[in-house]
Amino acid sequence: MRSGSFESRRISVERRYSDFLHFHQKLLEEFEEELEDVVLPRKHLTGNFSPEIMSERRLSLQDYLTKLYAVRCVRYSPLFPAFFTEQEQKRAHTFLRAGQFQQALLQLQTILEIQEKLLPWQKPTLIVPTLAAMAVCFRDLEEPEQAFAVAHRALPPVRRYQMKPYRAALLELLVDLGYQLGKPVAQLQEEMMLLRDAERGEVSSRSLKEIVVHQFT
Image (cartoon, rainbow, N blue to C red):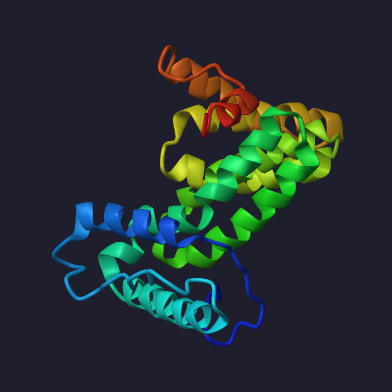
């Protein structure tokens, strides 16, 4: 994956043919008419693992993704980024729930790079769950500077798109980390108090870690 024709850095993900098949079926449920001319390459019944067949299939699937990408409604659909990140997200959250934060971070950083390449065609909220999970990992690895920076990056789209549970939890984390790091947090603390007072009973009281852990369960 590259975000532009002149970008040299590439990100790779591995998917089986069965993953492509499941992805295509889900797309057809929503965009059957729009995908009338986009056909998933058929699987060969014999010789699936010969070098020639594998090379041919790789090229045909690459062409398939290019055609999908050219369909505007697919490119902007949440199904599109999910195909490239969902397996890695589940793996990352398995590591996170097991307390293996370094392994979780490795997965999350790859996910974030993929999502950043897709952001021109997706809402900025796409990266919020990933950034939130990274903030939790950095904090539990006792790397407060990185945790603060990542959480602070997630805050603008959370504010803009009214992601209330994330907003309260992020503010709480930022205030705690800010005190620990000696950063000015009065404005963040005031925002957190105003949010809780204005939307009492509507804003989740769960911590950011609780919100993150409940994803992909």
